[in-house]
Amino acid sequence: MPIRLVLVDDHPIVLDGLESLFRLESDIRVVARCVNGEEALTAVSRHRPDVLLLDLRLPRKDGLAVLRELHQKKLGVKVVLLAAVLEGEEVLEAFRLGVRGMVLKEQAPQMVVRCVRRVHAGDQWVEKQACTRALHALLDREAGESAAASILTPREIQMVRMVAGGLRNKEMSEKLAISEGTVKIHLHHIYQKLKVENRVQLTLCAQSRKLV
Image (cartoon, rainbow, N blue to C red):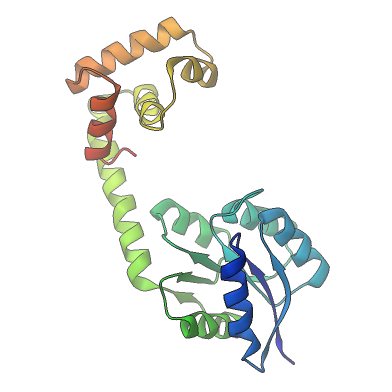
């Protein structure tokens, strides 16, 4: 009986390539192809595939949001995550949510086929080099957080990340439920503690300390 496979990627050319690749395999049958997270969830519910090959970056529910919903609904499909890059926190959450395989898009096409077969057989398939890089980045960030914690309060660290993420004072005040004046006071204290003069310098400082 062939492995029933659902493909999910928001780029039609990638979907076409994947479908053509799996059509060459007599033991694998593509039962659906999807371009966003909502379509992926519908396809899994409707077709009950053996394996879901899921892109991480998707519109209308990204890959992690799809994984959370699959985990919550206990649909039982085995998931292979497909990604251009893997971040440390994403890797850890994906594992917690039951992902059985991870493949980088830069890998040779036959590696994706082998991964699907191995995961269907009950094994795990993890691209070790990518996961190692991701986990090292996560450890660097945690080390940066520990160093920053000796200088900044948890609220100040949160605000540094908001600034680095491009949020303006008004947006920060809304998210934190404080006034813009209070935001400015906090930022003034942060600038003094980190010896920076503006938002650009603060963002560069956050990056160098692995806070973002």
